[in-house]
Length: 455
Ligand SMILES: [Zn+2]
Image 1 (cartoon, rainbow, N blue to C red):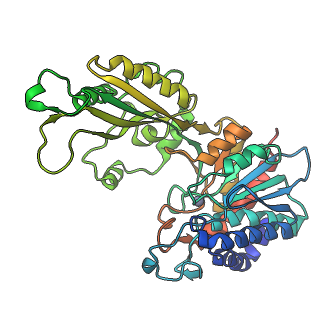
Image 2: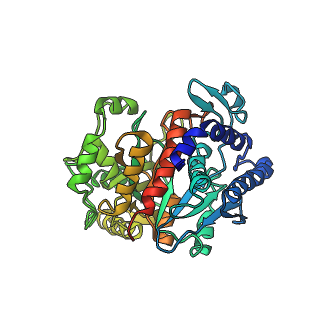
């Protein structure tokens, strides 16, 4: 029996084991579940130990992380598999049709908190390794697991843990299954995330709100000055006007743009889902390209002056705005912050005092399209799902993926087995049992395909 046959033969058992995993209410955000978190970490570590890994529950300063290691040879690649065993809170409980931590099968889905995010997806990788051990007695490549317990908690002890354990976690590529396919039966490999840079600016005119009758016409209005500045940040082609903003930014290859053109995408449906009267964006790019491969600038909030009931006839003392910029490869958050600072200072009228606060951002990441990893992952998906995957990117950023790149220097393959409508973070979270099974096969095939990559 080979590993794939083993997984097919043991589908029922795998599902029952996943249910055990799901029964542990490992809610990381709620302190009354701290004990459940520990129980869950131990469950994961015990499973890996039984499989043949050197596994350990590691302290991070917050909820523990589980690290598992299996070394077969220095001649084959090392894969780092990341996932999280913690889950979101279950409130509002009255909207659940079943008890969140009593998994049930219904209509081809497994319903439980954590079923898709991320226990179900993570477990495919644990079963994949087990299938090799049970059939071939060893793994085809070196495998390390980093399975954290704080992904949903909004705190970050993991970055420090990765920094401290950089040597132990060293690998050639990272594998993450904690997301969605492109659509139903449309598996995809996400190979890039945009970065982000964030600034807040404030314009101050008079040292207090002034009477608009007595002073109006003689003193500049900070809100109007700020709006003029904000409005000038895009040109008639909706390109950002900050000098140097696009300097040596990554240019998507024709291959890449061809991949996006192949994606089933209905612009009208997409527009309708936003509720906006019309789509918008940089001339020369499709909506997918505008959100995945082009850098952008948004004003997230603008404030100043009187916003209470009725009238207050003033020239406000100040106005402020929050601005974020989404970045594509080769753009550095700190440099972009410096560029926008220089530009805004230059265009700020001399009737205003200008202040800016620059926040730390996130660096964009991308798996090289010409490297071996994407092709290997694509073959694995073909094996597991019976069809070629789509290649996608994501407009937002995932902090841990950036950490893997900046701290460990390794690229991350995001191979999500879930669906957008799996109700992750919502009541009645679910995971298609078929996707779980295809995920197990894909995860196993991935280990084999990645083992063949020549370093
Ligand atoms: Zn998740």
